[in-house]
Image (tube, rainbow over all chains, first blue to last red; front, side, top):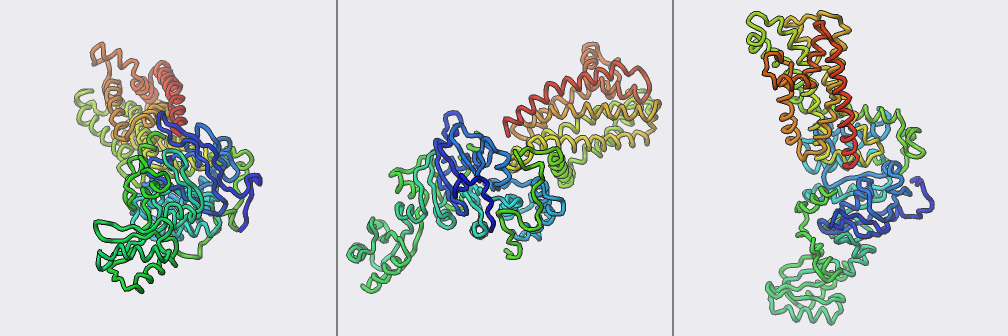
Length: 347
Length: 284
């Protein structure tokens, strides 16, 4: 794939943010954020509602002018070169920004024309994108009649009409059903395979783990952790294995056996007192197999085994030692968007 | 998802022309690109009408309903029984003034909705001049005004409207009401940018609309009104416009009313357009 290096000085970072500040009155939406997104990778920006994720994306897409700090995207400064910058980015917000009164096709055609494609090219590109996002059958339908998932797909298609080098996805799966969520995830994988750089904001550890190679965790406008997903996982704990023994009385013995075999990770396993289950932090698939194998070999009866990822709340607890004041319930699929709405109004 | 359309995201795909030259360099948007953007956005606004046929009512049905209502129901009372034909020549030019006001209102709700929904964010994150969004709205509303005026005149001719001067005078009357209507759009754009919901815009607009419309010379001669009201109607821009259009079509002294109308047009534009643009810039 050809890479156009617009500014060789920017190195291999498609997005460079330094000390970015944006205050709305007393609210410090961004309070000195630093982050980098390497070209051709996905950076996950993880944080609860109201952490500043949307304000960050709005600054990086020239919708909001920061109070201080710098941000350079694809070699262009967000404040000094907004016009050039807009040519290289695609934005998909939490709230699908398509015209509900226009058909899917007309929405995409309009975007193509606004991006200076010829009539013919705009038409072809609209057809192409509808097909890519499985919307061809609904091409003539007014977007207001689309389901939530279809609308999100149309919004994503609209963001990609101009073949942007850098794509912002602001909570792309909030409020989507699991099937549609998986479709969006597939599309993100595909974009990266094609060489795009993606900045993705999310409230869900699961989504970040699925899509991002690096993570920046923000809370109350500040970066509280960043690094490779694996490194952060080691810090906050990856999956947790939940084992329910046939006899609750076995739990202490099982924990001891795992500890002696060195299979319970650095933090050690943990008994859940009220329902007699044992929780084991899991860092690799091998460890998972070994744990279950060991307990089976020792003759402990197991009635149920499950793994789960830490919730955003648990991630915060692990990083900061306290729960995020602004953290929501963290359940996937919940549309806990009151805080972000407030953020939007403030914008 | 199909694999046949996996066009590269980065760089230009084969067959895609290089971006317009006016776009390169400092990223300034050239005139031709600007016109193209306005065209694409005007198409959008026109298509919105198609998706929302009720919005045609004020353009197509309102002139028809109002002219029938006023000629046959109130016309006899206003102009005297049997004088309905003469009243057509009084009413139609007056209604040309009213159409502009009613249609200009739609700009406000449209601008408001764009900001409420995420569409404006999409436009603002694109390499287009922000003003083209407003200009496209004005272009389409002027188009709607012209259509409404054509329907009004057609209906008028059916009911016996008689142009006593020339086609040129008629066109001057149409032009004057469109120019005045365009100046009103700035007021409604300002309202649309200020109010929280489209419904609120409509509510406030109606509050202003009713007294201006009926406290004017549009439907009945102010000489039949009490003195205090007459002093209001004398300066009501809608009266000025109605009188100007009436005298242009029926013959009569036009200078005063035409100058008053143009004065109002300039005054309204000079005061509200900068305010609306400033508000728009602050919001965008």
